[in-house]
Amino acid sequence: MDDSQNMVGSRAGDAAAFGGRVVVVTGAGSRAPGVGNGRAAAVLVARAGARVALLDERAEWAQETRLMIDTEGGDACVIPTDVSDADSCAASVQTVLDRFGSIYGLVNNVGIGGPPGTAVEVDPDAWDPGMQVNVKSMMLMAKYCIPHMASVGAGAIVNVSSVAGLRGGIPSLLYPTSKAAVIGLSRAMAAHHGRQGIRVNCVAPGMVYTPMVSSRGMSEETRVARQSRSMLGTEGTGWDVGHAVRYLLSDEARWLSGVVLPIDAGASAGTATAYPALPGQLATDGALPVSARP
Ligand SMILES: NC(=O)c1ccc[n+]([C@@H]2O[C@H](COP(=O)([O-])OP(=O)(O)OC[C@H]3O[C@@H](n4cnc5c(N)ncnc54)[C@H](O)[C@@H]3O)[C@@H](O)[C@H]2O)c1
Image (tube, rainbow, N blue to C red; front, side):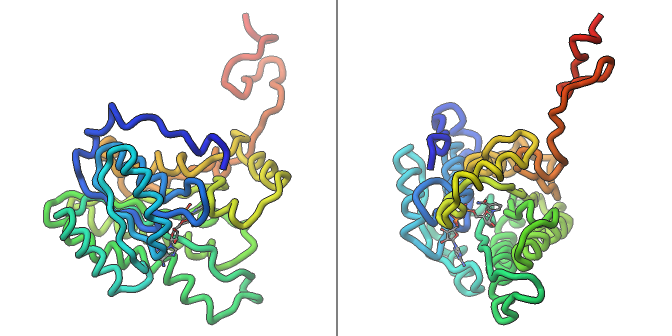
């Protein structure tokens, strides 16, 4: 990963924001060296004073995240979990309660590419397992966490979708279908649990460059091409996603629920229009062009 992945800042200053609240992050490891969305979210909430439960089926990948948090003086533990399995989710939530005593936040971050192919090509037998990891897992984790949030009248959930769930253009069918389902699930859950003091929001990352992407191998040419598809024309990282997750979990977002927040340099909102303004027109930054200024 490049240096932008080390956009760390300092623990001092914002450590009181979560005041020891407990946040569960699923998929808190990263599949390759570097910082993915789940790892970034975990490190950033820990830095803001949360105690963090790192759930991952690959405990050794989550241990790397715990080391990062430990190094900064934070409090985290790793709980091996398969979030697509109900018993595993229930047992892990109980472990969180045994270790920390409460649950305030849940980040449903686990998501996989799933089987490739269009409706014609995709392996039907691989469809249900893919939906189970990407969608059912979020219901399961919420099912076991929400009663504990509701019992104290406070909680915040962030589900990780993708811009692939907002618009077409992805070569496979399962991934965008599952990510669109995550958006519907988030809105429905927000409506069900708002009166219990629980906020449910969703982030939709765009083409961020994370270990999930780099580990598949990507040419420099493709990497540059995907950056240039957004309004800003720049590359995002796991930290960009992590910052948004931390905000949505925090009290600063106390009046936000049911939101779907794209983190994509504007890619899902439209296309870049960096053309020179004609005399008398507003420039793209909203300012009058020099030729039209009084
Ligand atoms: N990286 C991108 O470009 C991008 C873009 C849009 C959305 N997303 C979404 O972001 C999320 C993940 O991002 P990341 O960077 O943290 O990915 P990552 O692949 O680096 O890490 C995900 C972690 O999830 C774990 N995991 C996988 N299946 C699991 C299961 N059944 N139970 C428990 N843990 C499991 C893996 O072991 C891994 O440590 C996914 O929901 C993905 O769809 C990523």
